[in-house]
Length: 106
Image (tube, rainbow, N blue to C red; front, side, top):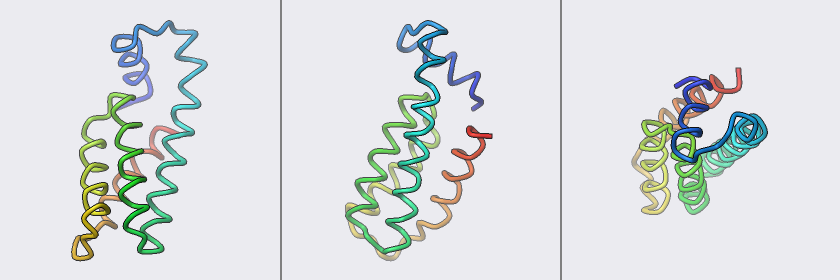
């Protein structure tokens, strides 16, 4: 999904004006990036509690922007963190989410 599609989603779902979207979208993207940093930090430190929390936060951020496929991936990370599933490979999911976030910031 492109930034333009996110703009359309925000306008249709939340009835925001173009000026409201222009004001809010940079903050939404900044928050998304911050949540992604939290996911990566949790993985780096094998902190499953934090991974569950960060996965939950980034899932909500993706949903608010209409990025449902990414929200599904974030939900998997949330679940892995909350269940302390040390057997699952979170790295690939995190890499896919980072690529999605980075593409929105480009």
